[in-house]
Image 1: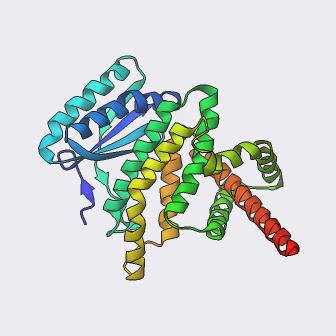
Image 2: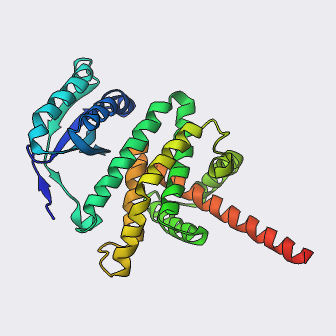
Image 3: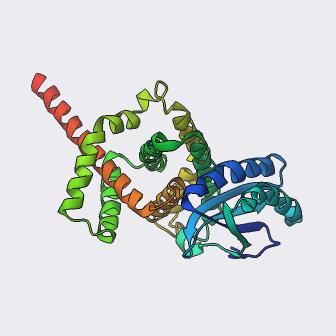
Length: 300
């Protein structure tokens, strides 16, 4: 499996330096239209982005060309989409770089599927960003983050108990990083109690069609429909003992990258909050089901 792609190969890699507040504008007003145009014209067949700091904040955008001969067209289209932001100083530097696949992180025999997942995730996130704005948009951003994480766990066939066990481990890992103590736990519990009703409404799929967030849930469903086949591919590799990276470990990376794309800054802190809220939600649902079962037994 090929690891390294320099400019002129099938992968064209941009680093776009901009601020956290303007990064969403670059994504929705430049990258979204140019990527849609390149896909429509068959110049690329996929692309994805992540947010990064080196230490300066920038967007890393990678386009997969249908053939290397499409390089000039791609550069021309991307130039035209980005130059207005350069001229207004919203972008202060653009560079091209070498794309080195993280083969050890995603597996030699699953890296191409991972890149497809990154593509579908990037499309979903960029369309979500295009629909949210202002203070209300920031609330919607973390609410849709909760559902997006739950969706990924559903797609990869985690049951309710497995979701809770898995996310407790993730949350505890992030808790160590952020020095989780009684005060922070208390703050998170208090915030969850305040938002509990809203969270339960967002997590209840029966409410989707009537919800103000219906267009966002539709984007989640579109991604879900397109990546369901990854589940069977992963399970087949696992059953044949050919899966190089355990599913939980792959999921760690998938969820981390999804949160990276969704949030403008402090992505790891947002991850901690989302994982903690989901743990509280799953625990609450588990207790509720247990109570219902007890009542049913008592009636009998």
